[in-house]
Length: 471
Length: 81
Image 1 (tube, rainbow over the protein chains, first blue to last red):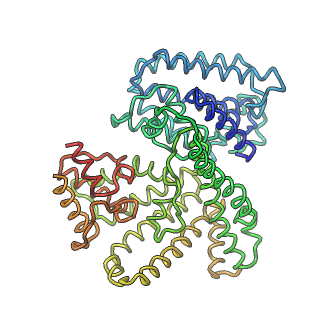
Image 2 (image 1 turned 135 degrees about the vertical axis):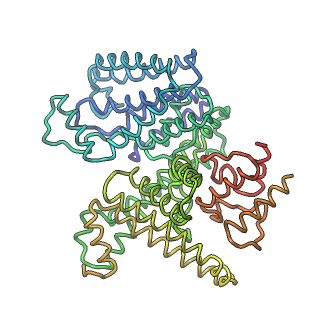
Image 3 (image 1 turned 30 degrees about the vertical axis):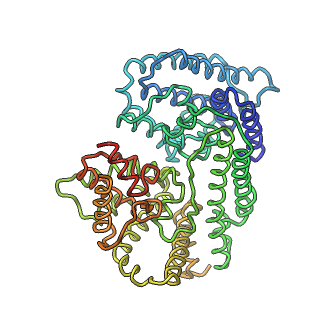
């Protein structure tokens, strides 16, 4: 998001916070509009218009298979609102001055109407047999996820779509299908499907569900809230904005804007990237690039989180925290308890804990260290894959998975001795501060795989940092 | 009743998780957010609670938002018994 886009969103949010009335409709309509508005332009004809529609369709279908709350008047009304917004945006095609919601001219309206018809048919089918589609929905979401995250597959899909559209195949690239917000949307949807399967999903109506999934402050960069927590805020009567709440939310927003647009964007000028990694000739400068990247990614991401939390607070929604001073933690386990917390919590809830529980239930369970190694590495590699299925994200996941395992074993061996040694506040501080410095460097070196795109360049960079080969 | 629950869990945490049998754990001390119990040991704790008190703790509930102290965990257990 650009600073102008954020300011426009803030102005409209404040306007509705002051109006007080119609907040829930505002949140739904604004979320849908913002999704079309922020979607980047794509080279495949019409796609920047179809992708937000696809997000809405999979969200509505997932609601349908997870709900007991059938088509009542309220839900039909929500469907009508969504369809009207789509058609209105589509109609802007005929008014060149009015194309403010989409990055390029929307396609012919006939295609949208055909999509509505197919949507309607599937909708009634799913309504009849909803629960039996839960596993199918899960597999479908994960498949889309893989296609979007494995660059070779994205290119295949793009070639196919270009061919269908009679467009040239010469410039085909994985960037052709940038589905804004999909990583977050898919994880929210999977959360509701898994909770439905466990019988613990609260009953929500369609409007609440869509607002939760594509909630505009958190749409592009999280956090990943839990639905039961989100609707608790949503169902609380909105009492408007008093002075105290305004300053609290405003302060959060300003801190976020400063972190993102002043600190992170300045650091970006010297942060490690594929170009400067091969150009820099001095070891000292290399460390500076790595440090700059480590701080840039933190200020960028936590800045966006502050912005999201601030905007949401204006309108009475308290999104969960995503960062809690992660670089000031004395070990890697604590770092991961405080970095992108809503994502790691998601992985604990739906991967790490179920797998650990399953491994424990074996007749002859494997040894504890083996189990810890397996679950930690698998979880961290999957978190790597969430960013993209590439070698570098895999290595980054392995780096952290093995790091967590080693920390766990080390802690087991030395915990008693360390507690015995650190018998004065001074010694405790020494232990704590050296832990913080070591953990920060471990994470910073891991970021090299995150910042660069090839394992070879990344490895050479590490060798040069430690003077194994001269720069 | 709650006192019995907290005592028995405190004993389990000190002996089996922290491996410091003499360590005293206060009933309002932060267990998860402080990093005292890591995510792996948290599953040990859940299985212990399930076996001892016959109360199910879901995989999605093993976090500081659901319970962070002995008191909160004991409250959760009592409310489900």
